[in-house]
Length: 196
Image 1 (tube, rainbow, N blue to C red):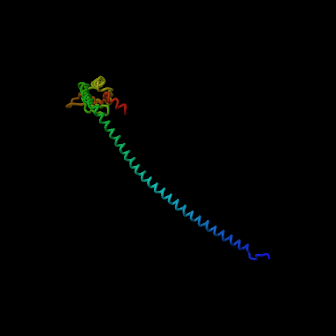
Image 2: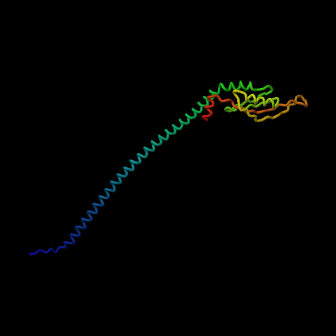
Image 3: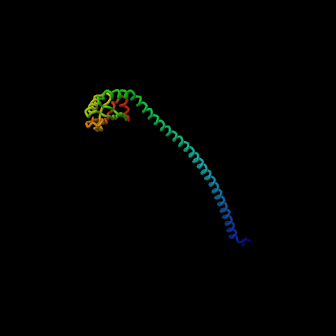
């Protein structure tokens, strides 16, 4: 005799498939949650590792900045010391020259010319004084031109001043002058000036 199944097998099949679907959906959601949690921990660990590396790099950079600052301070100190050494060397080279210049100044002074002030800036010498006449100032300039330690005379100021003695109407006249000259450069000084 043939068997007839009168039970609602299609509804059971549907219910069974629905249950399998929800189980699969729950499993997928659980797997996704585990994956998300796992990826969160992995990325959080990577971010923490990168933060640690960044902090290490910042600390190293600050140490290098301190070293760079020390190096710059040392370079500035070195350049100051080199400048001082250069000045000392220039003074050492020019020390005998100033003696010759003063000796030569005595030789170039004609009679009737008196210096009141002498200033030297670098190789430039400024002589201020009085002379009995303008002719004596001209003689001073000619003597400077012939000098072996001074050259390039330049007359800046000549003022003729009258001075009366004891009520005389005819007083003597004196010329106040300012003359500039240059010291003759020695071999070492020429090299130093060309370097500057």
